[in-house]
Length: 181
Ligand SMILES: CC(C)(COP(=O)(O)OP(=O)(O)OC[C@H]1O[C@@H](n2cnc3c(N)ncnc32)[C@H](O)[C@@H]1OP(=O)(O)O)[C@@H](O)C(=O)NCCC(=O)NCCS
Image 1 (cartoon, rainbow, N blue to C red):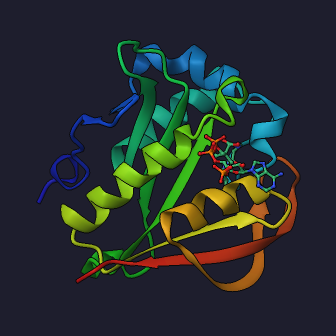
Image 2: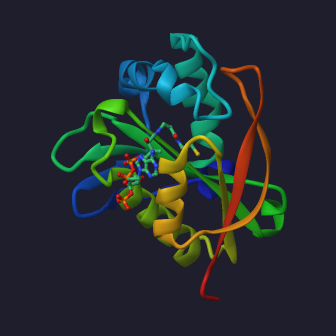
């Protein structure tokens, strides 16, 4: 199967949100959101400062190879965040993927990521037939832990994950959610 087919993703509508594929019109919104050090330091793969070339790398190399959606509010097309499933070790045999997400700081605290991630988790189980989904968060980011626990994820261990902005490994909490199958 061609990569484009493997990582095709439908528009997903939830109560307040519309999830769609990120595109070239999102560059400035992406730079504004993840150029914020308070967002970048909570993520593994985000350089800081974050340049237009970094946004292009995301659009050209990350988006085509993962199930990543732009988060928009219903009725608006502005990208306010991203949520996705990254194929992980074992994904070649359909075993697992990792849930990740970020939201522009102006939209924190409204339950948006919980709503968006719940829909993407359902896609992972119902459409991709994943037996389980992994995730993880830096130990000093309890809001992300709260999101995962609200979705039903349970802790599987503690470790470290790299943080590109900080240039070092950071204490992390590893989480997992099993599907019903
Ligand atoms: C973490 C993040 C995704 C949360 O998004 P959000 O849409 O604000 O999250 P929600 O509103 O759906 O839920 C946040 C939950 O965390 C809780 N929370 C917020 N700050 C908290 C804190 N300091 N300690 C504990 N819980 C906290 C909220 O109360 C809420 O739980 P509740 O609904 O039970 O009250 C968002 O802040 C973000 O994008 N941060 C930067 C990037 C990032 O951290 N990505 C995840 C990397 S693992």
